[in-house]
Length: 370
Image (tube, rainbow, N blue to C red):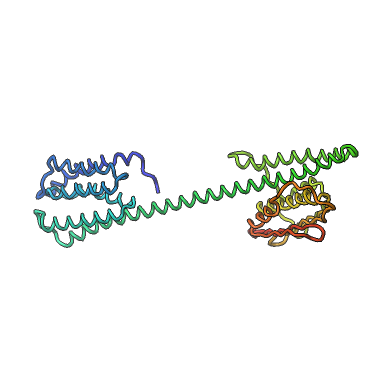
């Protein structure tokens, strides 16, 4: 619904006052049997529009005031017609603002007054039933129009509320996604840095070359984590350039950084995946390798990607470590992976497999256009 120009609201009472006074003078020429508007009549013509000034804050009082002014003006014998403008506007306003009972009550009072006045009190006899029906129809039209406008405004307000709630929900989901991305990036790279730092400290005296390799891995991992964090955080800035998100095409790089003996197996028809599936697959493999680094350092790992016609199967299986890795604190790795899979309508299981552990995820691949 288009908003009214701001100047209409404050100027409406003045416009109605001018309209009622000038049109009443014109109406008197066609109603010679009615009393000419004197100073009191003009004051009544102005009083109704003046009451409209408070129509937003006090719709019921405005409605009662315009009804009283209208009834007094008609009872004094002045011309019919323009004096009703204020009452019609006040009646419509009351219905739109939800004062429906007051509006209907005033409508009944106004109708009874007109029927009684035109039947027994007016100097000229009433035109009859047709006149009464016309008055009732006019009042009904005003009420119906008010109800229509009120219902439309309520629908628009409800639609706006739903849109705002959906916007807030999407923003909340985006924040959750950003938090999950940051968790995965930090968990993987910091775990890798921790393990390589421990290796470097252990070998720095006896095998400095291997310690140098570990330190080189730490340097690269710290650089990678900063790059990925910038990529994730940039999407929170309006107008910031967006780097490509991590996907399965970077799996080889991920495997090399992990420092684990990893065997990759790819079956099925390798093809481009929807971004959300591609990103989720990468993060699941990343988190699974992080868990191996934490809990079974040095274990052999097999990463299987099976591109099926309707789903992507991911299996990350490790052989188990000779000794448990040093814990870096309680983690949300498996629940986080499971949430990623569930968000896409897939599933994820994590269980012991022989002496090691297996993470298996099934991610649906939406059917693309033919």
